[in-house]
Amino acid sequence: MTNFEDRVLYQGDPWVRLDTLPRLLAEGWRRTLSAGGVVSVVRTPFQWSMGSPVIEIETGGYMGDVGLYVPEVQLPEALALLGLDEEEETDQDM
Image 1 (cartoon, rainbow, N blue to C red):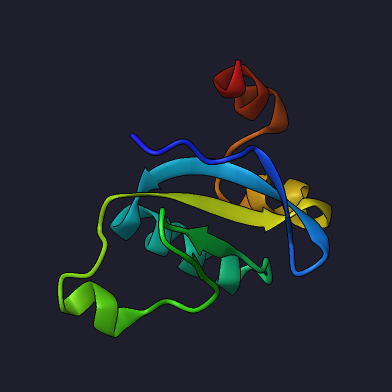
Image 2 (cartoon, one colour):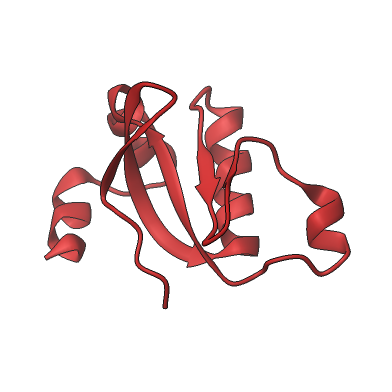
């Protein structure tokens, strides 16, 4: 499994990794986050992806594990939208 950093600087701002999960699941979570007004980005072992690259998914592009990140300032909103809480996330990181 690919390891992604818990916190990164992306476009000059701090972003937090919500989880590392298969690409299709991450894209589903991104839709949920987007519907709730939370910005997210996926990090594959090769690149960052701000938009859902439907063509890449349909043509069999990278479908392995990705890191799903949100801006640090939106972390509480993201966790609430996904039905997670910060304490649960902290326990997973240890």
